[in-house]
Length: 504
Image 1 (cartoon, rainbow, N blue to C red):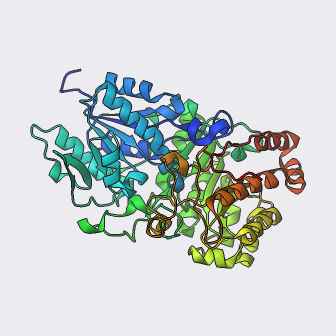
Image 2 (cartoon, rainbow, N blue to C red; image 1 turned 180 degrees about the vertical axis):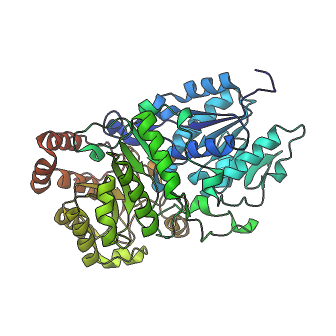
Image 3 (cartoon, helix red, strand yellow; image 1 turned 120 degrees about the horizontal axis):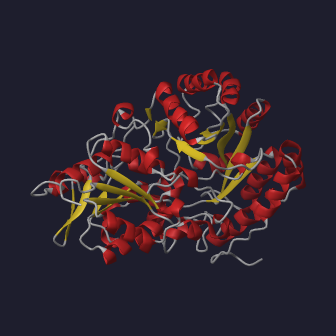
């Protein structure tokens, strides 16, 4: 390939499913499309650069195989994307990202590598120092990537002009002033580059398809970026900051950005008509928030008569009565709620100020509208003890939602809890894989009253109690049939290996 038509950019979604999910990775865990890599590809292509995506997760490529593919393509820049499929999933991508960077360095040491994503935006200097990478992008990384490509293609690259870039100058770490957030997303980043992705390889979550367990084809889209909330256990704000304080970086309060309903429906039309997709995840950190936006999208889906199976995130205090009928008619069969904890004391301590009565009312309204609920619960928040964790499990059993996710509290880089853990000297995982909820070396935070191992023990206990509950299995059988109930039993039979688990 001549220099004139040399490939400009390879975006890499690093593979690491088996380490993250253990035995759950083969059939139970979803295979998610790399939404951020797809958006970045569109953004860069729209500025005249050539792009390819290597989805090592979907293609089940080892780090060595990924690096060999990159070497064959010989791009100007390789960007390893460290964004997860949810805010808390970015750090657990790091072991795969690190392995890919090392493999590239061993096979093609002259290739330029950029790390970009939520985790590295939280820890740019540490990522640059610890990983086999030439550059790290602070913030979202979009303008940083664009300006770095332009610099690398110039006769005399000047990295000092690339906003948001961390890099080496000799043996000294350099950090440039921040890059802005991309505000005009609809014009500059109109959708995901589906044509660059192996669309036939993506698979929905098992619960998403309890109506028959037909999980493919599957896709995920954003209709908004950012989040207006600041829960202390969440790291979502990390890439939407403009960087480190010493560089004049500041928190962004207007990071919540929208694609119009008309644009969203154009993306859905592509998925339905070109790729035959029915199962769709709205990956927005908080989709059910702005009524005009939500209802506008619902109206356009209903007008077209699409038979979709959609799930999205919501908050207990953002669901409006007038939304529910249209959400259901548009195909929103699942809403995921961050219920987190039963105790007011525990919730208020992490700025999750929603009352118990509101939780019951909202969940009841949603289910009465025919929409299934995923309840998300967290054990081991700072004010948790055994009594409050049992209260949370009792709440989950009483709500008896169609599905539940049980998490241990992690101090994810980029969250307020991470800064608190460093300040207080709390033990953190020894490796980035330890931030995964399902890995062997998972190590949650201790609470003010309990060690981390006891939190983890209770979390795994709660999972087994919930999914083996006769009340829950009876409800699943009535709603979805005996085949789905049998699937739940099989899912619950997987016992995760835990290095830090307390024996009981």
